[in-house]
Amino acid sequence: MANAVDIQRRAHPERKIILAERDAFPTDLYVIQGLIGLLDRGYTLRLIDRPEDLNAAVTGQTAVVVLSHVNYRTGYLYDMRAVDELVHARGALAVWDLCHSIGAVPIDLKGADADFAIGCTYKYLNGGPGAPAMLWAHPRHRADFRQPLSGWWGHARPFDMAVDYVPDPGIRSFLCGTQPIVSMSLVACGVDIFLQTGMEKIRRKSLALTDLFIELVEQECAGQGLALETPLDHAHRGSHVSFRHPQGYAVVQALIARGVIGDYREPEVMRFGITPLYLRFVDVWEAVQHLKAVLARREWERDEFRERGLVT
Image (cartoon, rainbow, N blue to C red):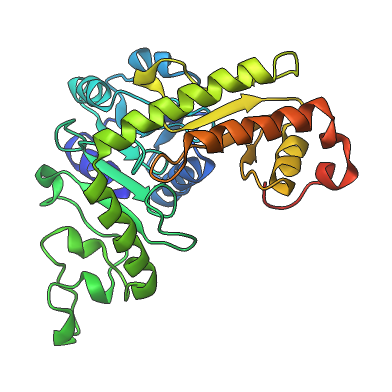
């Protein structure tokens, strides 16, 4: 983010708008707000409410567009190539958040002509809690980008123990300190499994599983106050499915007590991650049967499920 703004500041100082989604994962918005405050150069954050608002929102004043490839709440999937073409045609740069798409849908950053991307490895890549994050920068930007946090491992020759910082000429300059070796080893195992399987196969199973989940919920839980938030269109669906329910938080807690692990996101959204690498079709069927029982028996009314915890 900082590099995208810095590149645009030097090339197009008149561009002062950073564009993002109102429904972005909050951390993305907090980082943008923090950067604007730190720079204090007149940048403003402009938010769009719907994906279809993007075209009109990208103008000659836009410096950078920050988008989630897959929306964390709804599962909406952007057409990355089409967005990058639009953004570049208007003279802006694109930064992609891949946290809810990497390992779930095929991604071709170079083919889509993306500028920058960040992501996590603890979700679909099976790195587990505390797993390392990742970043990507298009080669055309690598001569221009600068790491705002200069650290030992970003040095061109870290074991020279030099007094003066000389950045590595490549993406390695974005390393700061010693890497978490145990966590990286776990991520390597997860990535190896993906390499053996192939993303196209994973994507086909993901769509089949999410189709089944949606169909079964609408069939088995009809009349229970559920509203689908996730797109039906395969071209715009990631690998999680979200339904709204007025008592969504308590319903999710009741499901967790039954061994069905979903999560809750404000407002009223129950989110179910479909991990095609190891999830079976029978698992989807059984999860829906538990959801049906929780709703039909009104288990969500129990006090222990309605009491809010810090983590949802």
